[in-house]
View 1 (cartoon, rainbow, N blue to C red):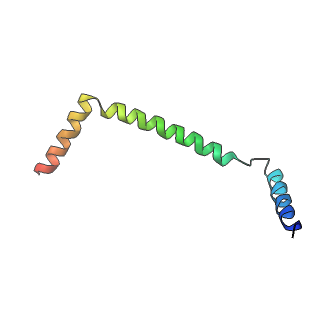
View 2: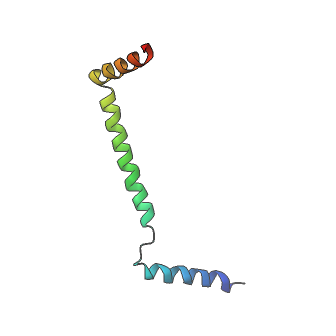
View 3: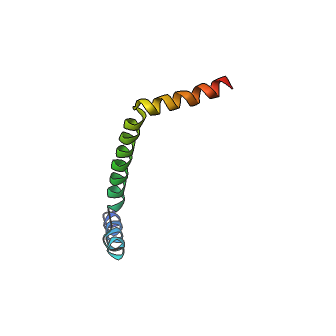
Length: 67
C-alpha cells in the first residue's frame, strides 16, 4: 500500500521534468491576469467618475427610456 503514492509522485516528477519544470506556471499566470484585471477595473472606475462621461451615459439612458 505504501508503494502506490511513491509511484504516483515519481510519475508526476518525471512528467514535470519532461515539460521543462513548468510546474506552477498556471498559478503565476493567474496572478498576473488578476493584477491586470484589477488595474483595468481601476482605470474604468476613474474614467466613469468623470463628469463628462457621466453626463454622456445619462444622456444615452434618457434617450433610451424616452424612445
